[in-house]
Image (cartoon, one colour):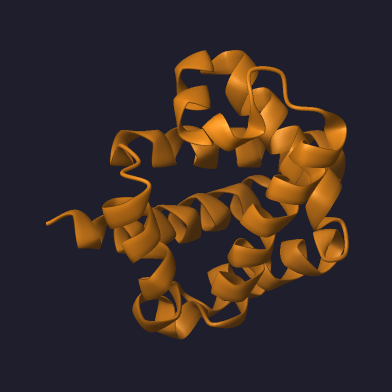
Length: 141
């Protein structure tokens, strides 16, 4: 359960990055593929060496989903159910990869927002994104 302050931090950070989903998402994917190359197996549609257009497109889709989660943070299960079905039943993504995505996204946030991304904001985002990951993994059971 997120506190009112944590919700405010999440919304505040999202307001700073909204409209920049594509470049932030592309950077997230580049970091993910560099630090955790085994994750590329889940992005075969991007090929072995995805170009910038592919990274921007898929990164934007990923972060738009995060934006929806931010918008409906009180109702994550309902809003993320189709995405959970997709990842569990169609894409068959190993749920141990979700924390890797979370970590890379937080690095992207910290590198771009720097001093604006406080320790409290990082903690709130970590808690929020972990909640998103929990919802996404529920369909694996």
